[in-house]
Image (cartoon, rainbow, N blue to C red; front, side, top):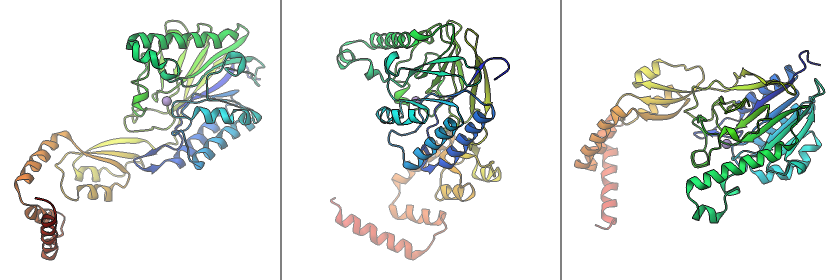
Length: 393
Ligand SMILES: [Mn+2]
């Protein structure tokens, strides 16, 4: 029994297991971060883990990605922790539903789709630490096509449809929250965008910008904590009432643009009728993403970069071999771009190129790349002549 009588929850989201970055697998990092989260849950002896969607990065995750997730969920469940998972927009809702009964056999709630409160839309459990009862309203990702019909999309105005979407979410939540009472811990677990939320950078844009936002006022006032997923930045949303609304954020920066994040999980202490207290626990296992800027010489001199993945912005004009030079010194450079200040020069060079013969350009290229060999130039001329002869004038 915990001394203060509070139920202890761990809220996490947006694992995106299986997500690669510029072609690199990050499964080992993802495994390490999930092990870190599991360690926190076990050490703190939490009553429940709330996982707010985008468990996987893909609707058809690899077997290895599935293994990492299922082993994590199973480790938590076997430790006696209540494990409650909903599908996000990246997850395959029907696969979640197909696995739902199987998962329930090992004590894992695995909700892919919205269900009525009386038929799976609400998950109830008794906290092992305090014996309090908890009620969790489950709102997996609902696309606007899941709410707004084809006819309305065609005939309705954008604002009318956005309003309709928000009203539907409000009604759905009110329905799911019907069983909230002063004697229970009342929670909402959802994957959606709220108005006022700040994007992290790595979300799939078409499904966040294009999706309708819902006002934080849609959450029933009887809710004691709203555990959200979808936005990758850790943030609290200010609602009109006293309902604490939190995005846990992604535990591993998913893409450049999320590099300023401090990844965390949220620990939530709450008892029936009381106000939830939320504490962030930082995560250290994932490799960070970092943007570095400078000339090639400066960039190389700045190494090593603590094992961070790099987006490199070069402050000098592009040239033959530049990319190779950078990659040789900085193998973790995943993205290389020329700073806009030096692209004008690049454009000018292109204009120059248009005025010069392919032979001259090739000779220049060979000289820059350290490949000056008359045999190579002769071969190039031969191939060029052949190509010109066979292509229609
Ligand atoms: Mn999402």
